[in-house]
Length: 193
Image (cartoon, rainbow, N blue to C red):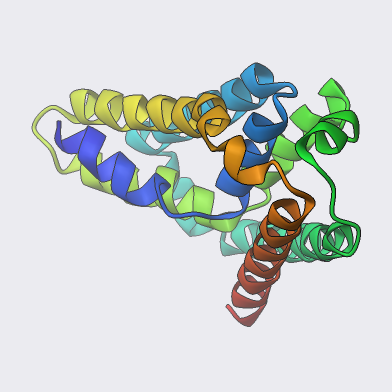
């Protein structure tokens, strides 16, 4: 239970990855592959942290710095793209037609996952450290992994509940603006360290 709650507190914050999964859920395009990529990536990273990989990462700060700058570029690009999409608002049906291919959806999900240094800090270092301080570290890890699987499933497949809210072009315009600002804000935060 401690692992589940700790995992939820780290993953529930709306960030780049969550916004992308939500958008895929709203358009109903490649939701299962995107949810699987994000959830299974977290499972692997949490397991790596509990297994002690965090110590290796702490010894190679250049790796986090490299990921950080790739993340800055990717998030800035995606933020600008979202703001450009807001200039030409669409309906949900148009968004479904303009959705990416399966391959690009999976590639984008992988980029949002592995080009975000906060993913490594949260899953490998923080959850790994907390888990290793527990009497039953792997039970803690299973709880955190369960939190990730449940969260990505909820926002990916639960997004359909918000379908009515996004039935108008104006709603999509607001969503694209919010996503764009969020992405640019995260990119700026990463760039400033």
